[in-house]
Length: 575
Image 1 (tube, one colour):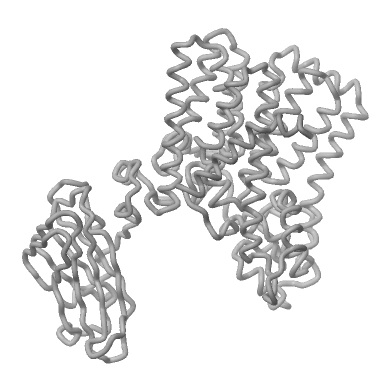
Image 2 (tube, one colour):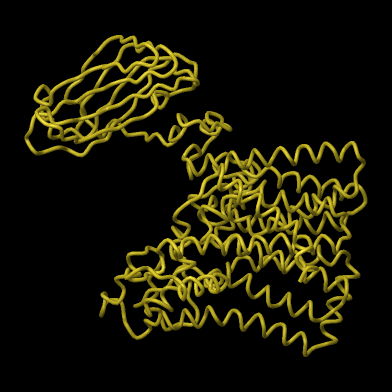
């Protein structure tokens, strides 16, 4: 036991450091099972709590009530006359021990269990941590197969956890499949490499098990099989390893049966849900192999892999360097896999993979990028090594800051561009939260009911100033107003921490109908420290109670005086 604990002390320390950063900087979340994560996870509450998985004898249109729970989740899709979970079951299988422990030991004090209460949310976070822990253990074991020095292995483990999107997906989106797929693929890499090194057929069987699990987690990840030539190390080693498998046909057949047995689990679940062993559960989404988004998936500000996870670019450079320095097979097989993988992933109809931090489809393969970097550190002169180490270490705070930015709405979840990216680049102050989320409206859809020119207003630092106040009776058709647009000329300095408040209150009472408080810089339309006409659109629900109301616009100055020029208010209704 002491030997085992000693062997994993580094991995435990890396995970402890990660948890420390979550608790003290990045922040914890209460809900880890959300969005796609619901689909990956819902097999468990469906089977063990709600007992509604088997629906192949309940057509949707004959008994819609049987589908009321799953319809509310938004992760089930129609398959003929039935509905199936859109997402594969592999993640739920790995979450199962954690779910069962929570299910059997948690007392909700009379509250009916639905599988989504706080204890279940926390257990999925713990599950993600556990499989991340196993991932870096298998990363170490794989690098040891390459006789990598200890310091390079530890450095690689730290980078995998703290310099990549794993930082986000083992915490905020712990219910997604990516950390679990990272574990399965990293374990697969180890057993395949070990097989080609040792020719031990038990390694082949373990690799078969993990290959089946990889597909069960996310079907497209079967592509990892194309990385086997790299793991073999040479053409001769690849041939000899394959020949040995055919010389032991029983073991080869057993390995194939292991993979097929794993895949049958998903087919059985499809059958129980929809009466068919084969279901395409992504209607409306497909691959367009005639129009891959190569550049965007790697370099776009929207989701580009190397923009949000630059440590992986160093991994790519490491491959090219090693290829130039006498390892052409190494570089050729790695680059071939990378090009094919990128071609396939970038051909998906939603190449940016929805709301996500960085290009999440690559997370599963992160070990493949980290391995070359670790090998490079073992084989370069001290001067270049120090440069690589320094650049790599810089990506750690870079990633942690961007992870925080994503969680705190400083980065947009799916609509980033170069302007937005550099506007909030590495900024963490509260005034930048939501800045790039500012909505744009089509002015042709609105009509101005009343426009008011307030003129110029000067405010003093640390004071609250009323910019304008008006009664609803002074605004024609106020009951039709759906938006109040405020325009202010200013230079919108980046350091300005003033806030501006729009409120609508009952004139003769204390009732508040509307209150919106934002930082003044959110009015900015072009860029910081540039004179411009800024604006903000306050979208409101029409108020129809017939009572008199007071509309107020106030500015709470921060640490600076403010000069607001050419202030205007427009009350808009829809055309």
